Each structure stands twice: as C-alpha cells, then as structure tokens.
Length: 382
Image (cartoon, rainbow, N blue to C red):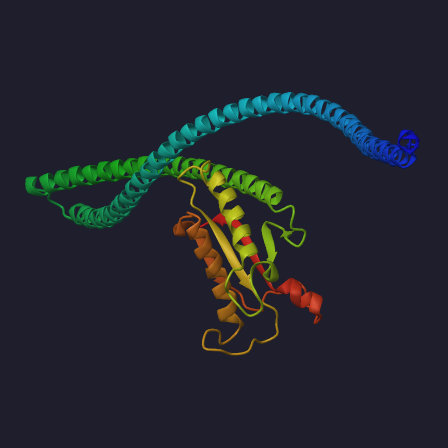
C-alpha cells in the first residue's frame, strides 16, 4: 500500500522546452516575415520616391518646355500678325497693279486699233500718192506734148505770118485763118497755164501727203518702240522671278539677257533625256513663264528661245547622235517637250542647236569644257 501511494515525480521539462522552442520558432518566423515585409516595403517606397523624383524632374522640364512653347507661340503669333499685315499690303499692291495692267492693256488695245487704222490710212494714202504720181506723169507728158504742138503751131503761125506779110494782097480768107490761128494759139496758152497750175497743186498735195506719211511713220515707229519697251518690261519681270526661283542653284549663271544652265544639271553625259532634277527645274521655269505670259498682251509676239551648246570634243557616234549638232539640238528639243508637258504653248518656243561653235570659254581645260556644255534660255520677240 505504501508502495502504491508513493507518487511518481512528474517530469514536464521536455514538453515545456519543446513548446518554448516551437513558440520561439514561430516568433522568429513572424519576425523574419516582418523583416522581409519591411525590406520589401522599404524597397517599394524607395523605388516610388525615385519614380516621384524622376516624375518631378520631367514635370519641371515639361513646364520649361511649355513655357518656351508659349513664348514661341506668342512670337509666332506676332510674326503671323506682321506677315498677315504684309500679305494684306501685298494683296492691295497686287490688286492696284492688276488694275493698272488692265488699264494699260485697254490703252494698248485702243492704241493698236489706232495704229491699224493709221496703217490702213497710210496704205490708202500711198495708193493715192502712186495714183497722183501716175497722173502727174501723164499731165507732164501732156504738157510737153502740148508745148511741142504749141511751139509747132507758133512756128507755123510765124511762117504763115511771114507768108501773109510777103503777099501784097490780103484776102478775107487769109485774115480769117490768121484770126483762127491766133485764137487757137491763145487757147493752147490757156491750156498750158491750166496744166502748169494743176501740176503745182498736185506737187503741193504730194508734199503734204509725204509729210503726213512721214508723221504717221514716226507715230508707228513710236508705237512699235513702246511695244518693244513693254516686252522688255515683261522680260525683266520674267528674269527677276526666274532668278528668285533658281537662286538655290549657284551653278546657273546669267549672261546678258540669257539664263545659262550647265548641261550636267539637266542631262547625263552624252544623253538628251532630262533627269528628275532637270524636270523639276523645267517645271519651275514653266510655272514662272505662265505667270508672266498671263500678263503679256496678246498682240505682243513673244517666244522663249532655248539654245543647246556642247563642248568642242566630238562624241562617240551612234545611231541617235552622229555629231554634236544632233546632241545640242536634241537637248533643246527635250526641254521644249517638257515645257509643253507643263502647258506652255508650242507656238511660244523655239529650239536651236549650236553644237560646239559658240563657246563662252575658248580654253581647252575641263572647267572650260564644263562651262561650254550648257542650255541657254532667252525671252525675246519673234
């Protein structure tokens, strides 16, 4: 019984240690999770701060760009206002010039009608003058013939008079014949005087007609000179606009009243086919020419002359080009055809080939050869 009542000692340490260790591991695990969460959160916050910093920097830059854009927009608006005002002034000047051109065109048309009438008047007066000259020649011949007959009659009269004076007895018949001869002589003298007066009047009329013809010729020459000056005006305007349009091509030269295009800008070596750049230049030329042609009065007979030139070196003969003559002519014709494609009337153009016989640089160097290979353009009258 005593043995049974003896208590067996309770050993709880191992269980406590296990529970404590388990709790400690849980705590450590929770701490690790907390530390990891903190690290992740810190990293996220750091990245967010960096992103916010970068975003702030970009916003600052965008604000600066926006400020510059606003300033540039304000400047452009001011410039646009100035350009608009200039454009309005230019349109006003163009309107005034167009009105002036219309008035001058009407004036030229009226002047041309007057010139046509004057030409017809001159023609009529020349025909009348020729008729008067024929009449004067006829009157002069008649006067000479009458004068000869008068002299003959006078001589006969003197002979009869002498014969009558020699006769001792005068009869009535002889006296009547003498009286008749005297009357005929007086009539012939009166006819001769009338013819002389008519001749003087005709000569005065011819002198007056000649003066009128000279005056009309002077007026006609003045009108033709005015037309030439008007063509020179449009030629100058054409050259000015074409010079502005081709100013970006430093190789294009101006020689007197001609534009000189190096062949290399338009064609390949030994070819008459226009390249892309050549077609673009011809298109610009056609555009400028159409603008000027619209202002030139229809009665001014103008043409655009296109001259082709080569250097003195002979080309390799082919079926298409036997010499530099064919090449220079074909290049000028190619430009004419391209101008026709750009709606320039064929009747307003002339193509000419000069081969190598009109060089602008006589030296025998590559630079001289390049200058001599050219296309020349000239606005002139037919």
